[in-house]
Image (cartoon, rainbow, N blue to C red; front, side, top):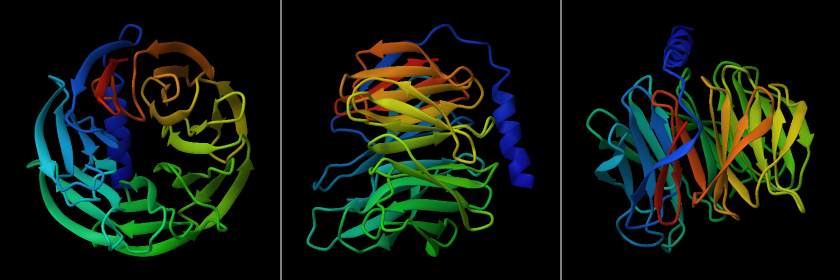
Length: 327
């Protein structure tokens, strides 16, 4: 409960920031290699970005100073450990997960990074079954658990972030989970499937609340811990959409976006949602109150999205670098 209050305080403290004008591209940060998953620490104003070499020997987590929007450090991590990133900003820790699909021995790794020193604390093997490996990750800052979308075994693995050990497996009925999301306030996990379904799982009571069938290919999800609403990107045949669910999985809206929507994130303090459309190279902005598109920014080559609600900036990773958008 103490952690829950701390989380709520951190969120509410950010709401006192002065409202920003309409969304604009503030900066572009070129990188030597493609970037994928990323996460922001709104307290330290640092952004951590996974930069894999896809079979090379120099995977890294890039550290961006949110004040200058420049890369200030590259943290070397084992090959395969740089794919998805989540940040525990209550404790200033960073977790990077990923899989080495290129070596003769398949393995998926979890690396813990100290956010104060930006140095690796430990790396552990969490999965060795060949297959699609890790397809998404979410984090519970209250119970200090990592949720891993395990594509190799078609389930969600729950990892104790302190010990690095798997403590639970969430059965997904042989469906392959993708970019999962977690709401620490409601203690609910949202699991999209590329088959066009999505599942709501109550972590506190270890029960499945709902199975939602909507759309064609659900990819990533983001939860607003203030409103409880969840946004799922859906690359539907004909019309791509972002699906809006309430905390129990009831469909509230289907919002048309651009081609091949992929990464999504939400600012709980402004109730704005950001969707990266990989097919058209732009960013869709959605008002979470009205569930309506309010802007579309062109020239955004991105796959993944992370909101820093402390600075009111949005960071998007892509094949040629990182785009910074001011909210």
